[in-house]
Length: 171
Image 1 (cartoon, rainbow, N blue to C red):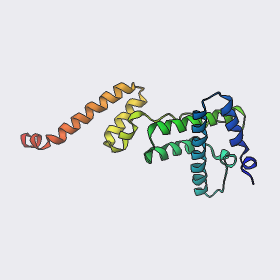
Image 2 (image 1 turned 180 degrees about the vertical axis):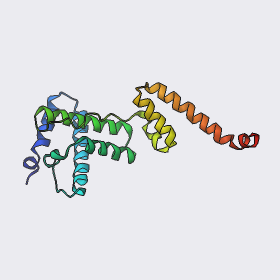
Image 3 (image 1 turned 60 degrees about the vertical axis):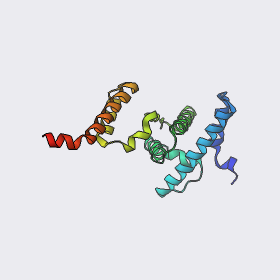
Image 4 (image 1 turned 60 degrees about the horizontal axis):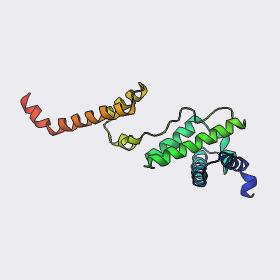
């Protein structure tokens, strides 16, 4: 079946993007991001045992958990932060389009936030430091304060490791 007939939702979304008056480069990026997501989603959904091959067939599976899984996939695979955030923006547009056209009822991107600039540091940090970061974020502490606190903690932990032997010999 030809692409145009197979994936009417994708084609309608591309038309919707054109109506937003975005630059040709942004439009190209949105289409590329959408294609990346569709490819990933098809493989993910097939791993559940459902055979899908287009966005139109993926739509019934669009949930918060699927979007979160996609975000995690990108961050775990070291996709640059700006690319992750741009792809998430594309999915927010897709979600708004799907709800506005009543193709789906719920905004599957609701609650999916952009990745922070310091996100690449997270996997390498001590789990306690990650937990502290998560606590600060949950408390809605400003990003600059979080950055400063985490910097202070890292410096302290480095000092502690360096002076471990000296401290043990004194006590």
